[in-house]
Length: 92
Image (cartoon, rainbow, N blue to C red):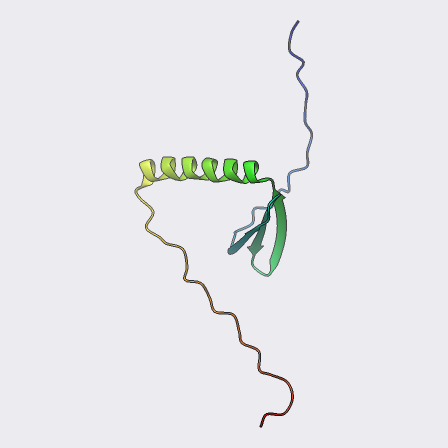
């Protein structure tokens, strides 16, 4: 019996966006990616297994890029300190 081929239809946004920042958070059931492009941001959710697949795919693509164009020299940015709120009210 031949395998059934299904066509998956989706809409692809024709615009190309430059990622300017990414924040990633996680809980037991999901990873949440907040992706910024200029002053716009979108949030995406992925299961832990799917997040791992994204990581592996990105690692593979970066390795292929580096074979072709040389090693990318970079590191994660230092953790930014959050702004400390001044207390409200009177002080002694």
